[in-house]
Image (tube, rainbow, N blue to C red; front, side, top):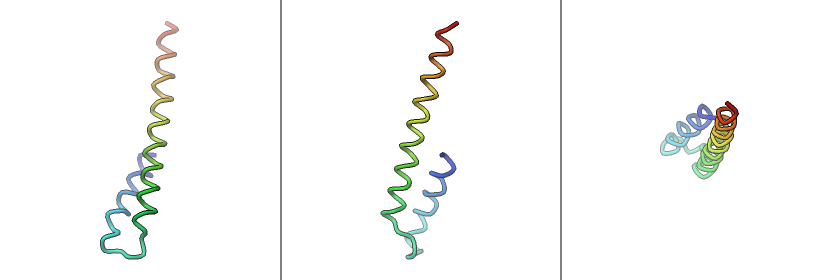
Length: 55
């Protein structure tokens, strides 16, 4: 997901000179990738807590 977000960021920066790219679409894709990162991080943190509480 980090790679996907980085790709969207790169394309978003190019919207200033590349008129074929839709900045609003890329903003949405970037936001979605960031939300996905947040969800996965929450899952990782919960799992880590669960594993270490069992010991």
